[in-house]
Length: 244
Image (cartoon, rainbow, N blue to C red; front, side, top):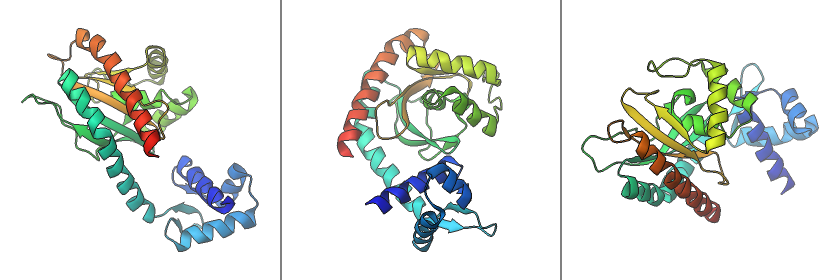
């Protein structure tokens, strides 16, 4: 069991480092002796969960992709009833998203019944600074980690409303932490407004959102929707913890 715990810890360290790392960095981060790390890494390499690069550094391996895809499908199955509840109560499209490296990936969606509705393909990856789900996710991190993420990705303007400076983004993070939800006010796509809430207490960093055209998602709608999305996010966290 100890070896299993250590192997998972090494994979987590590699993921936090961006997916690629040296043995010495693993030793510094894990506190484990180099012989122990080398033995565990060789086992992970032999099973395809880690691969050795020509530079002799190590990277996350291809077998993790299949595990991640299966986990994502199961997560979508568990989340869909909660997203459907949001759609029933609010009438707009509901999404579930997670951090995938420095980007946000949409893992589940239930569409609005309206003919004019928002649609984001499950599996789509976006930059976090311009999306409500991305901002809700980064607001769960310490400020220095959130700012390091947007420094790495850059902060390109998707619309004229996109936040493009670190100072403004830090202020936005503080506001989100204070009010408990994030808003995308036409920052990713003109004419679209979105409300997102972190799934706090769940087994992974996730965010739930509701989005639609500004004509329907008014500021009065936002005031009504935010506590409903918060309630559903809390319920989803409880269900996922029970599943795990």
